[in-house]
Each structure stands twice: as C-alpha cells, then as structure tokens.
Image (cartoon, rainbow, N blue to C red; front, side, top):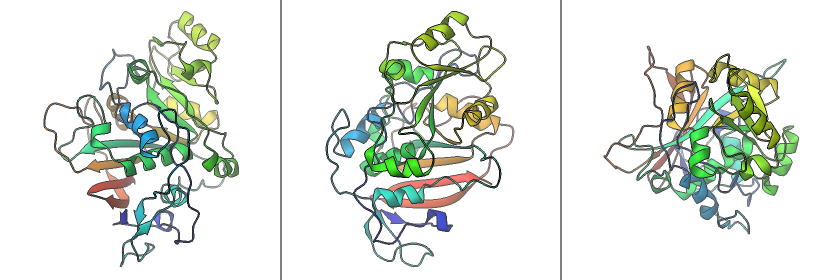
Length: 333
C-alpha cells in the first residue's frame, strides 16, 4: 500500500520500526459495510440487502477462518510514497498498529469529548455499492484490514435493522491484538453494536442480543411498540430512545450515544441509513474504498434517500493505494 496524499501528522504512517503483527480483523462475521438500512426514521424497510459478505471476508482475508480464530499471517498493507511530507520513503509492509495511527479518531478537545461519526463504505468506479447483492466481490484483502482496524478503534458500530434481519448480524468480538490500545483509550474490550429500528421487528434470539461481549444497543423512537421494547430488554439489549415518534432522529442518535460515553462512532450503513445521516448533517467523516471495477446494472449507491438541498463538502485527509484500490479518508470542511 502506498500513501498518495498524507495531509497531517495524524495520517502519516509511523516509521518502519513500529509494532507489527497485530490483527485488525474487528468482529468476524459482523454485518455489511454497504448493506441494507431499515426504516430508521419511521418509513418502511428499504435499501440494499446482502452486503454482509464484506465483513465475512474480513476474517478470511486475515487468515482467521470462518469463526475468526487462529493465527494471523504477517501481511501488512504497504505504505509510503517518496516526496510527500510525513510519508515513508520506501515501499514496505505496514503493521496494523500503523493503520490504526493512520485512521485514528481526532484527539478530543478540552472539556467533554465531542462525538465523531465516521462511515466506512466501498464503491466501484461507476458508483455501485455492491455486486449481486454483496459488497465482497468489489472488495479486497487490504480493504478488509482497514475495515477491521476501523472497528477496533470505535466505541460503537451503528447499523440498520434490515441488515440485522438479512444477515443474522453477530456481535463484535474482543481482539487481543487491540486490547491494550483499547484499555489505554478507556474503551471496553469490543465495540458495541447499535441497531437502529422503528418497528423493532428483530429476532431477539440472535447471538447479537443473547451473547454479546458488550450489551447490544437498540435505538428507536418514543412511540415504538412497548411490547417490542420489552422483548428487546428481556433478551439483554439496552433500549435507547432517540426520537419523539416511531423512528429515530439522527441528531438524537449521536447525542444519545455520546451521553452513554460513546464518542468514537462508526456506521457501516446501509445506504439508506447513511443517506439519513448525511441529510441530517451529523456525518463527520467518510472512509471510502474505491474499487477499480465497473459493474453497470442498477446497484445502489453508498448513500440513498432524498437528496440534500446543498451538496455537503468534505475535504480529503489521506489517500492510500494498493493494486489499484484507493482508500480515501474525507472529513467535513
């Protein structure tokens, strides 16, 4: 992997003497990056189903097997580009610790830390967020390593309920390779999964609710069905009200998670949920993998729903490249 565009010290890779051999696989078998959102703000189900293969491929790409177990081969991304400030001068393998530095959340300012919401998505050259209903065919091993690293840095992963229904979403798992860094950052052993749903039409018998290492959060509106909220709590989930009606208000979602101490926020979609976050103005950062593929067809874009009145302008923070795949990091201006 080469660094094409470092901007700040935060995005510059550490020298080659940095730690190596960490496992950035996040939660094996967790849900899709470009998967379906649900009726997050009170509408009916919509968006793209079947994107969970990207997360499943994360475990395979890292050599961890279907269940995410086993040793991780020494296979870092390659980093550095001569002539750019902060970049390495030689093409070499990056450790996952260096990837974690490259994608570190902004340092909190004085006083109470402010929440920072980033999204992680993948798209082809012609704008497709998936192929044949899955994002895995347009992804790559380096994308999976970044996917896992972003999970390892987050306090909570936000996902739409249709993704959970379609993919049998599983809880995030603690990773020994990131344990010390998470402890130093005051984080728990693994990120919580936060499911956004208006209807609460969820299978509360899934391991996501019955056996997570960190209790799963269910975000819904105050007018959601009381019996479904009770069922979620009985299964072990924590219900969080983030809206006055049936569905949630994206601004309230961010506020509610921050009040729980979750300020490093990550969403993996789906496209409809991401579109709602964009329209509400709460998205701070987009980590976007551009796949050097053309698919044509009618696949959904990474963000759906109504367009915004004025396009949102983001600035490029860093750009990495490997085998034609571009890994961009953009933040709001």
